[in-house]
Image (cartoon, rainbow, N blue to C red; front, side):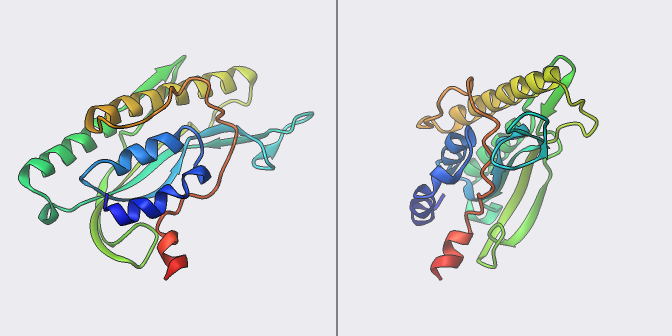
Length: 199
């Protein structure tokens, strides 16, 4: 990603949830990534007033997908070698799938589409956008077992994602995913708004 944009974004990393707080900066280190949009670690429970209240608990029922919205350099901005690396990375990330006790999460529905502006902005910048979303099943049962299975599966999903990133970005500094608090929600990750506020 372009150095100036990355420098602006790096000042705001604290506003990202864990573990995408480590995942997203590792994405920025990829030379074929032009920008990033929204991201979310994924949730089944949430604190801070999010989600449907649960009796006797400060946590709410909040099933929400894990997501990474990425904008890649288009063909004309890359060498043939870099285009091949970009497309192999996109394929590898879309191939991430994990399953625990019948719950399967993955990014297989990530389809690319061309855009003329950076994510969530009117800033000119042709790119290939691709949203990597891992949706929780809508019929998931509200139970202690479901909570445990979802959070274990989200941990495995991000571990696989981190593994892909480490292959393409040898400098990626991604902490172990195990132990992540998937119940702390931060609803802010619109990176392009940095430019809009400063414009």
